[in-house]
Image 1 (cartoon, one colour):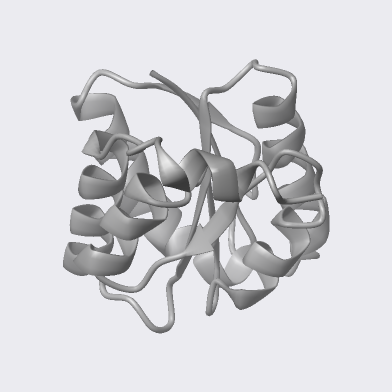
Image 2 (cartoon, rainbow, N blue to C red):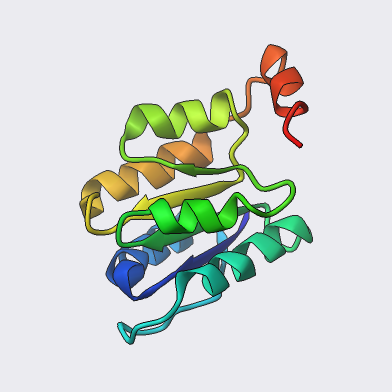
Length: 141
């Protein structure tokens, strides 16, 4: 699967943990930045990842900042993006199964690396359930 990933300075270290996990599992990764801990504005990085998902260049996206809140807010302004801020296994599964989330948001300052790896793995492995959930997603404007 092709996955676009981006972080701001507050999520850079966690992105560096997630990148090898994605590559080890055979995913093609499009890293849009940032590439160090120098302060950057997260909305621009969210835009880059979301644009890749919207255009079909990437099947899914991952965004990481300090809490994940800012990235999820910035991502969800994009038409067709269903960004989910997940903090543990259950929300990761449900965001895919019920909401067909196509962008995962994580917070480096609130989610440890081991838990983040578990979230990413289960999020990528979980399929959308369809059915009544599709009808509800179609109600999004």
